[in-house]
Image (cartoon, rainbow, N blue to C red; front, side, top):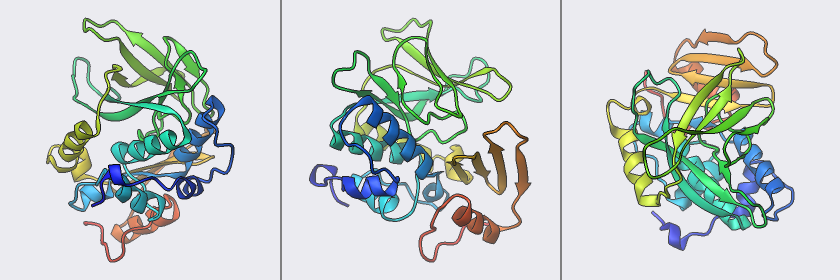
Length: 278
């Protein structure tokens, strides 16, 4: 395994992978464009944990897997790669961690297991919250200004960033997404405490190996296209069109159909010789 300190991201290859061929100056417009390009190009997936291995967060391995290997990844993988690309472009990046509140019961306190980042743009008065690794239909497609009550219409999505009442020494922020029925749904909550690579190594190991972790037990794959959001949980495929029309859900017949859907609908290439568990 190659050390990140000894590996420099192939920025040209990364930008080709996400289909971006525009300006490379570290401006807010470039940040928005590269963020959206990544979000639309790279699929959220947890194939490695389901197949029994812990995903490497080493930059060289991420480049081999996602940039050159036609794969996706979950938040630690995608945001580690994205942060490296942003730094190569000249942005300032601070890594953060969040508690996912989406789907939590009232009073539940979940661990901080989601990776995201604060991005600074030279000449801009406020930083941005950036995150290409959340995966779900409430995920950011573009960065949002990290200021209270900021709103972002990252079409077809609509987000809001609020500061919550909190007794701790750091401000507590929550990212919210507008649902199809017009309600605001919390996605995750976080402070601006910096996290480092070793922190994510520990969290990544827990998420990938703990038998109680959903990511170690069931296949979760999500992809946003220009027309719809696609979600695969186990063998349940859900397609939610952006135009507000009815979502479509069906059960896939077997692992062969799952593999075909992964390739055709989620643009994922399974490793040579790998068979999905039944």
